[in-house]
Amino acid sequence: MKKILVPVDFSSVCGDAVRFAIQLAEKNNAEITLLNSVHFDYFSDYQFTSFDSATSLMDDIRETMKVKVKEYVKKFDTRLKINTLVIESTLVNSIKELVKDEGYDLVVIGTHGSKGLQEAIVGSNTERVVRHAPCPVISVPSKSEATKIKRIMIPLDIREIKDSFLDKVASLQKQFNARIEF
Image 1 (cartoon, rainbow, N blue to C red):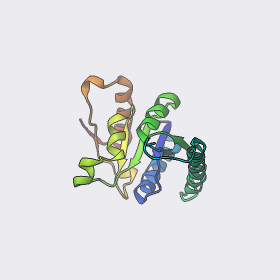
Image 2 (image 1 turned 90 degrees about the vertical axis):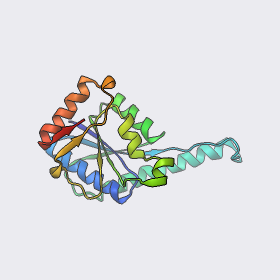
Image 3 (image 1 turned 180 degrees about the vertical axis):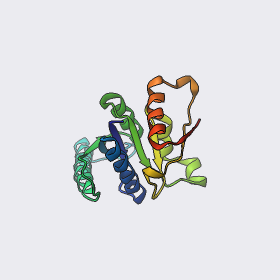
């Protein structure tokens, strides 16, 4: 495990996920990248005064987020260099592209645990990332520590499993000395 991707939205559970990823990265001499995904759905009945103003708005948001993510890094006490990235795309698509193009081995993402009607209607970003990321994903509940993992659950469709995925899971299992459940 050499490259860890951590989606950030600046929430408290996101901070816990970053701290968790730092613990893993320090133990494995790995690289961390914090990803902020900026996505705007354009609805045809919403009228901008011009296309330039919509483009300008997205440029402003993207530049603001770049600064905010770089500032966010300063919150964490680590000797590691933490890379930052802001992409204009949906979170799942951003992660899929980065894992494929940049070779990330692992995604670490915070989770609040959506419940009830909210989850039924909207779902959660974490759930979508776990379901669609082409590499292992660790979903980190609040205040979790990398040193306390005892079980690893792997939801999968056996028809889609790849040896490279299993190799990464085996590496995590060995590192945590954890039990794997499929």
